[in-house]
Length: 578
Ligand code: PRX
Image (cartoon, rainbow, N blue to C red; front, side, top):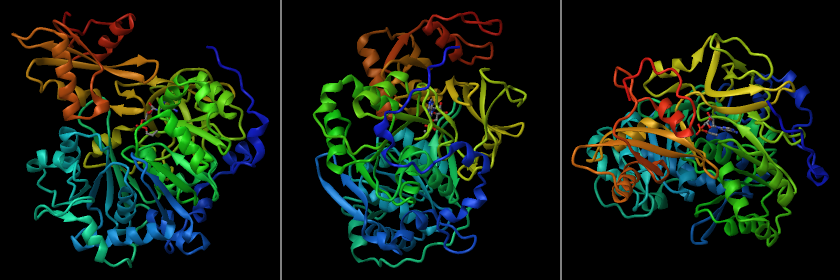
């Protein structure tokens, strides 16, 4: 196996002393209990992640500091101080109370990245209810699966997006209200956000939740079945705080930009709960990706810490070095990326153009925060995810749960018990338990550790697809495909792609009377897009006479993938002839 060499960071990188000064020492002596005081508790044993992210700052000189710089798709700008965020979220919490929201009720946010998304998220946590997020790209089927499983009581949305909820509302008996942030009340069930917020009190007594009380949930995909509701407790904010400090190296005077959407756990942990806990001003840009716009935002807001995804870095690379030079990006101090492998070329390119490397880090919706990372003071081996964060014991194990020696490939596993480890899968204990084997939390990723303790990602151990950093379950796409009138069967895989990491490829068989054609392919793609989401449709469709299946009739994605990659198919003795 060939490793890239350690690269030195340019001298200019070290102008400011990082928060984590000695990785080895901190890692060795780390004990979470000793760091409980780094976050703000309401009182002994009472912790509310919203209080810790926002309210605590209003009791200090930071109260008038900007918490959120918001820029909309058409250049609209808004700013909110910590105090304003606190009062607005108090109002929202009162609004929820008015509509009888109780502790543990599920309140979902189906919103684009508008300021109301952040206000409402904080407000929900203040009531003790569970906040769930949904990408605004989700279409009716994706919404129905998630809102039905969670038994959501209220959805907060916009005039435009609410139409998709109405398409499936008849199947959502537990949904009591729809709060619309930009429209007048149109039915008995709707609540007019603007109108209610005008008059409702800005005083609210935050629910004194315990560290183990449930705070937020996200639906995420595995290989089989529908997406699962991963739940986190209020204590997750401790790990998110510590990693915002040690890995993202955020401090008080930073202008921090995380490009993630809170529909993804990154946008919750490192745009709300962790990054605000350390007191940074956060930039949120709600518009589409454009390299010019992105660079101009860094220049305009003097962004110091930037957290993004490898696909975005690769897209920026495509637009070349010349464009970067048109902007003054000297404010940048620390760059991080997450979600998929960060190729060594991207690290080298960022040193060339930004004079500092992107620092890769690794985690999952289920881990609730970064678990493996590259740190400011540690040399980077481009292509490696780095080393476990203080408080995390990670290992490469075999099927018997035995730790494997350096350079041996195996399953990436973590010792359970860190504060942001998911605390349940909504109404699915069996699934939750399946993550834990032989005393380890199993990530479902394959990796190895080199002799210096750096972890290297190899790939998923299952069929989960990562396209532009988004996690897509093949089952969800297959289920949408087979609802198309022309399709009998479908098998879906992730196909390697230079820009997006992977793209979704579907293999399908057609019903008698239908013939493969470019028009049908387009129609099928549109069909999936309309039901699931813009990112979850197959960019490639291949028509087949039949698909490889086990004798019990299960489509073998593994075989489809091997065929696609021109690899040996392996043992086919249990297969039906194909
Ligand atoms: O396969 C790993 C990949 O993303 C998966 C987690 O996806 P999701 O829950 O959507 O991510 C949430 C927050 C990041 C992992 O199981 N992944 C994540 N980070 C990396 C990665 N693969 C390679 N390198 C990474 N740094």
